[in-house]
Image 1 (tube, rainbow, N blue to C red):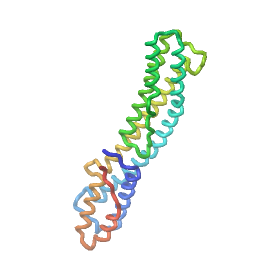
Image 2: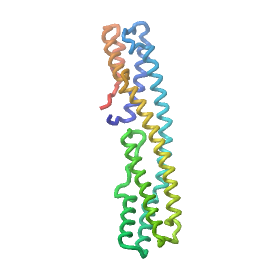
Image 3: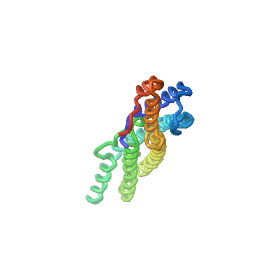
Image 4: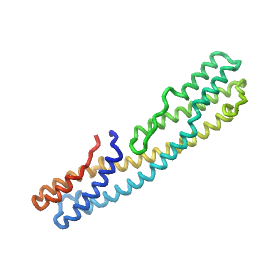
Length: 239
């Protein structure tokens, strides 16, 4: 499913609630034979949507905070790779070993910084891709540190690029990235629940509103004011 803006999704939710209120105002005039669009069955859907939106809004700041903490911790990584790989070049080890260390450092630095993810707009694919990018860098750091540790000659005086420091950094990044992944997956689940209700379920909101409009139109002049009111509410379908 292509990504819609959060504004579009939230507008659909708000408009469904408004449409429900309009139908309530009709009183006994609103009496469809289609059980799916009867008020007694529309009300639980409205309630479920509000619950899902509340849950989604609660999960966004958790994800944002987790991402921010990882960003702060991983920010020095590129410079540390440059310093440590340059130090390795100064050692009395083979040219092949030096090249391997340099290449591994390049994998961690990367030619492109992972794209930042906006939890307000990014859907499943964007979050998952970002997670894999960071996880790959962190995994490569572990390989790199092990590679350096295999050379007894690698014993810098600079604390920040010592093996124990790099190992501690890796351990911290693993913990922080796991927190991001957990929060991101929870966000994905919440979005999926919302999208199922709005667009995917058999009794999805978009289809229900179409059926409601058709029923109101069938009422002729009596239903026209209510039909016109609901038609003014814009419901955007996913592409």
